Image (cartoon, rainbow, N blue to C red; front, top):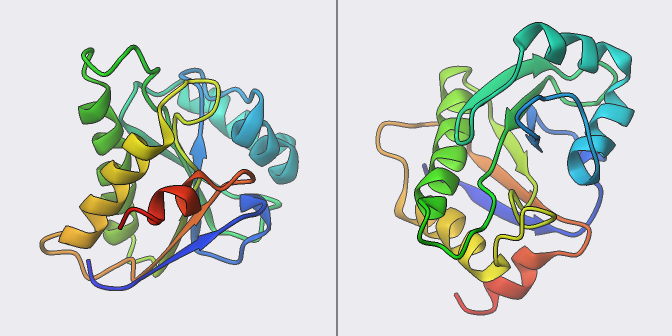
Length: 166
């Protein structure tokens, strides 16, 4: 992937992008943090669509319309719960980002916004999580021409803190 990465501190539900990535729980039924904010902003139609899907395993992606959000799609991702790093968490987190970007490429979307997946209540260390995403993006995505713009958003901006090391 060749393109631009913007790091922003703010509410992911207000961005004008093609898709936002939801840091969802495995049931896709809403919750706290980013997941709750996305469900509230999208309206009850999102919950109904998620109920039809029936859930999502860690690392995979499920796609719904964005309903009342300014985006076209919501990519629901279940990130790994941090258990110290020896329970496959890095591979699962890489799969979250890889699968979301693959889905965006398959749909020929130009812009995707990511929250800090697993960095909230799932306890993933911000530095380790940002390295997984940013190193993946900087090394490119073979065969992908889209998306061309990524937004990394978080209310507390762990991305900005971690970018200082790059």
